[in-house]
Length: 41
Length: 496
Image (cartoon, rainbow over all chains, first blue to last red; front, side):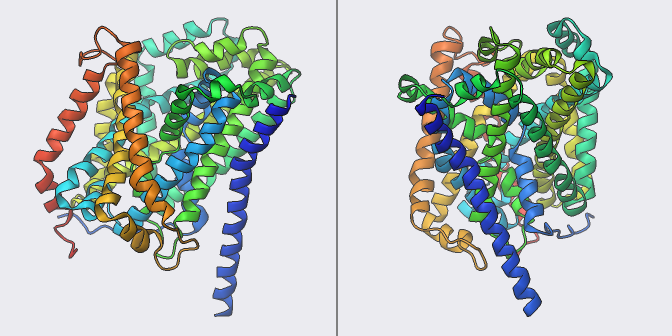
């Protein structure tokens, strides 16, 4: 595969799937923290 | 007298996010995305597509969730509450555009259901002429029966309620859709020759990247397939819990939607290059029948016949493909029904009566599209472009309310995980309206110069400027006449 193809793949798939994965991890952490706070409370 | 509406809320963050992703992920992610990528130079299209995900989809989804959550009203009441009561007609227009799309989207859902049945029975993989199969189906009365079935299922799910109907169904269908797409993707990328398809999808060319038409196609794709600016996400957000986050959930929705598109693109490009290495890409670009439907109902079924593994594997993969397409269509249809129901409920109609009214009207006004592809294409053109006006009206409502005030009070409300800065004011006040104007000018100029140079003004032509202006104008005039009445009905029992 040409370097431009690999570069675009990294940029596009990285942004879209990487962005989704990052947001999912943040949301999961927030949910876990809220659950823990509720249990402690 | 109508019973007061029982207040319902999505039970969890994931229930709400899956339901909102159900709105965003529709047939457009699967059949339109791949064709538009192919027509616009593969990788060159994907770069502006990611840019407009951030400049169109995310800001408008944030606005919709914040408006719905803060007003707890459907499109008419929400826009009136935000921009002022004399602008309720704008909310009615937003609601009507999505409802007009519902009329024919139910027909599309019916097509998917019919092809699911045909796949299961083996007809799809055994027929020798897919064009004839498609034409005999759409030329008969079967689309009407499937349209009625789709509308009945949609109405039943909405009747079950937000939690037991919409949330519970989306919690099952959306994960199943993702599993189906992943299964198809794994099969497609493991076919010999699939790597060339993936290379085509991600290879950019400088000529295309510098072509303004590729950028406009990417903006249009984001405007149509994320559900941003339709009023549907605003409607679901009315049922968000008070402590529910806005920016993070909007990001998850927009990125989740585009992730599905990318997965579908990889699957289709891999399959096309592996199974139809000669003229596959030109088929994908040109399409047959109506361009989008030609891909899904004529070209892809031909590819399933070429799949290795014999008839059993071919029936299995074509069945799960149309099952996924049906799920994608159905979960979007629920939200379109709910949008119209919510507007009527706000105006004092009981929920059950509103569902019966909306589904009956949905069935009746969908009949012309079920029986005539010409009528269907006209409605898709008129209300597809109308969605861009809807996006503009949402942006206008935020500007009228004060973007800074909206951000501080509605978006950065108490309990949210992420607070947005002043950059959001700039995007929603300047960048979104400029995109709306550019898009409408672009599509109208295409109609004038390309689609219908002789009759672009004629309201009776399918793809004319005249048909858009007359149909939009008629509805806007009607809603302006009834503006006071709609406001009086919507706010009659509310202290605000």
